Image 1 (cartoon, rainbow, N blue to C red):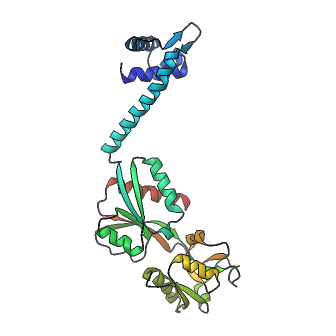
Image 2 (image 1 turned 120 degrees about the vertical axis):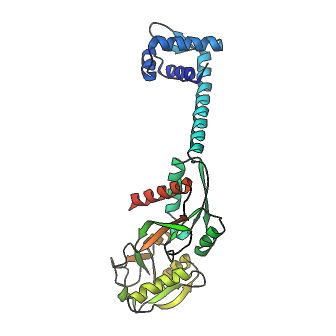
Image 3 (image 1 turned 180 degrees about the horizontal axis):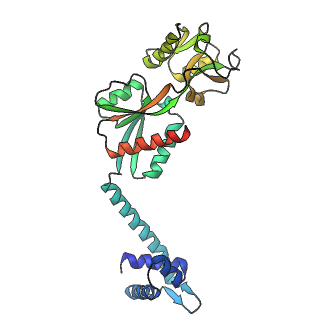
Length: 297
């Protein structure tokens, strides 16, 4: 008995027709008949009832079919695992990410990745910006997805931009700007701003300041928040307005409007950081993420 005989048996059991089974297997009908008889002799039990009109499984044949299907599945799974090991498609990837930047997209990326590479495990770590960079130094993560803020000169790390987004003004629906389809930065000079407290995120704080500075004014900051969620709550409380990337709207209440800022389309970027000469596992996840973002843009 060998694996080919078992596969031939399963094909005949599923077609119950020697002609169809032999065509699917690309062998002659007499050859298939001899192989089935040989299999029956080796296990000492008749598996098929044959007549001029049809072929039927015996009770023993039905039991044998159900068990052999499991065996062949296990065999195919074992072969795939061996091949995946040889090809480097097994292992664990420790992924750092900034949750607020990937609240909707990371689950979809990982679902795609696991469907394509089921033997690769991803351990996601939702860290702060500075913790992500520190984790590379400590070899705690293999790659990271995070906003491209001050990432231009990191030693021993490569960067690929995988997603771009537009910057928006976030206002309460009762605000005088709420009906606008787009807005100019200079129109915000007299507004009360909610900014990020630099103690919690210097990069987010600088981002808003730099956008306003480039337009020739300093934001009139009336509240410094401890998180992006805190910023949204303050906008909802009508304390002021703020500037955020468009994808943050998925974290906001329906009472907040996101208005695109003219000239700042596709200026917010999500980058993937990874070591120089990365393993194939990292490149596979990077490619899946890149393909996902290309499909939605």
